[in-house]
Length: 266
Length: 129
Image (cartoon, rainbow over all chains, first blue to last red):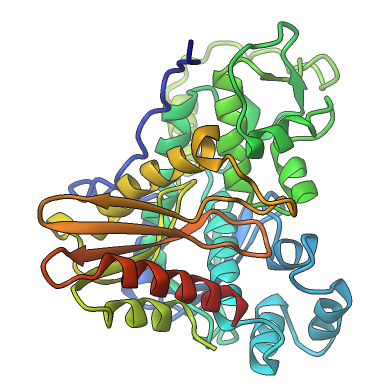
C-alpha cells in the first residue's frame, strides 16, 4: 500500500491580461519613476527611479535574520556593518563590497527578503499609504525590482495561498495543533514549522524562529491547515469584538462608509 | 565572485543552451531569467518547473539517502523530451531558501552529462563564491 494524498493545487501563473493594480498610487509611482519611501500599514518600500531597492515589514524577518540564523554570517559582522552604514540595505552593500559573502548568496538572500517583506507591505490595510519623496534610496549593486513586478508577484502569492487553503486566519493568529491528530504526511520543512506551533507563536514568529522567509512559512502553515494539522488559536484570549454598529440608512453615512471601504481597498 | 546574472549567463554558454532561470520552488517565482523559455514565457515555465522541483524535494522516495549533516540529498531533476532536456539543479544555500537553477537544453546540440556537471559547479559557485 502506498500512501496516496491529494496533490496540492498548481502554482498560479500571473494573468497578464489582468492589469488590476493593488493601488493606483503604486501605478503612479512606477509611471513617474519616483524615488522615495512608501510607508504602508504593514511595511515600507524604498523606491529608486520606480524600482524597489529594499523592503521592510514587521511580519517578515529581514536580511539580517535570514543571514545570521543559520550561521551564513556572524551576528557580530552584521552589527559592525550596520554600525558603519545608515541602514540595512547599505549594510548589505558594504558586506558585498568587503567580499564578506559570495555575491550570488547575498543577491539571492536580498531578493528573497525584498519579495518577502514586499508581500506584507502591500497587504490590504485599514489606512492609505503615504509616499515621501526622498532622494536617499538609490540603485546600488544589489538587484532591484520594478514596483509593478513586486505588485504582480504579491497578487500571485495571494492567489497561491488562497488556492492552498482559503481561510486566511492562520496567516496572523497564534497557532495551535489540531485536537484530532491528522494522519496526513508532513514534509520535513513542514515538520520544523509544526514543531514550533505552541499556541503562542504566529506564522511570522515561527518564520523568525526558523530564520525562514515569512511567506514560505505562510505556505507551509496553510498546507498544514488544509491537511488538518493546525488551526488558528480560538480567539478567547483576544479582546471581545465590539458590538456591530446599528444599521445605517442615512445616505451621507452610507457614502462615507463606501469611501472608507474604497480607501481600505487601496 | 559571480552574481545571479553572471551565473545564468555562464549556463547559457553551455552547448545547446536555450534558456536558464533561477527559481524559488516554494513560491514559483523566477528570481532571474536569461534566454528563451518554452512557449516564450519564463513566468509560466518557472511556476511549472517549481511544481516538479517541489514534488521531488518533498517526497521521501527521491530524498532518501540524506546526508548526515542534515543537508538535502537531492541534486537534480532531469526531464527529457524528443526535442530538449530540462535540467533542474537544487542550490544548497547555507541560509534557508528553496531555489534551483533551471537549464533548458536543445537535444541535438546539448550534452546532458556535461551540462549536469557544469550546472552543479555553477550552483555551488553561486552561493559559495
